[in-house]
Length: 346
Image 1 (tube, one colour):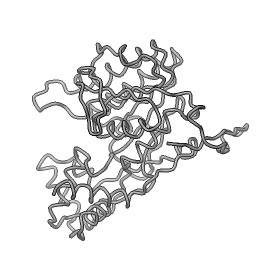
Image 2 (cartoon, one colour; image 1 turned 180 degrees about the vertical axis):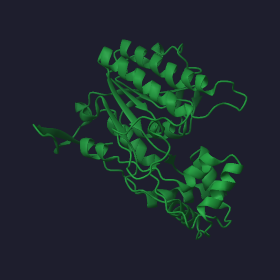
Image 3 (tube, rainbow, N blue to C red; image 1 turned 45 degrees about the vertical axis):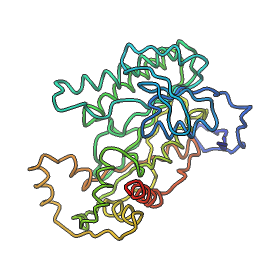
């Protein structure tokens, strides 16, 4: 994986843009060994494959296992503030911390926020402190756009937008960010924070998988009248940005909002997915207020907001500061997701 690298010009008025200085050869790289957490998950497994083509990657997961292609992961046990990382941090230049808890274990959990904090806050800060003590130069943390809230009405979100986490998961990610910044400032370890929205692909988990299943059913769907805008990020695009942030000099101590750069509506998402599955989506209109009322009665307000509401992200900072260009457009990525899901379901 070769990258174009840049010098950056500044004046009294501020940043004036990149000046390309060519590609960084493997001999010139300062980062050679990476610790990747969450290496068997949805994002982590793709990162493992991509980063492994350039760097020496130590892949960590809850338990040791052999993955597709013969890659081995090192077991570190359940993540907590007590997890010992010394055996996997030796000689590491950069940590890419993907592992975390995105969902509560079950509905009987008495304090979901406490459970999120154990993994997303305490475990992250414990890893960062041990990484500093082991001489790690850079720590890349995958956070969430949820630290800014769940929706937008008018102005898009950027790195300067207010921090108003909308759920326990998002709050735990924000608390982790704040703790990591304290460690970074105190110890001089470079920190990069990336806040992605929904990450999608044909094998995505969670809400996107539910949408794939719904579209694949072929039933008519009540979304023709929806006129919203959603910022999302294809798995390939997120992995490309994270890979760039591992070593790009301008990424040090920066926070980036990540997205495909082209927003799509719910009807567009469904049509692209259906086309990838080999058919034309059948959509019909239903007044939003009717769907909203039904969703509230069924306790599915969050699902309604995701399908009918807007969440628009301005991710230009990553483009201007890092020279990053997402390698795949959302229409192509959504078509591919639909095609991949369809082939897996056969």
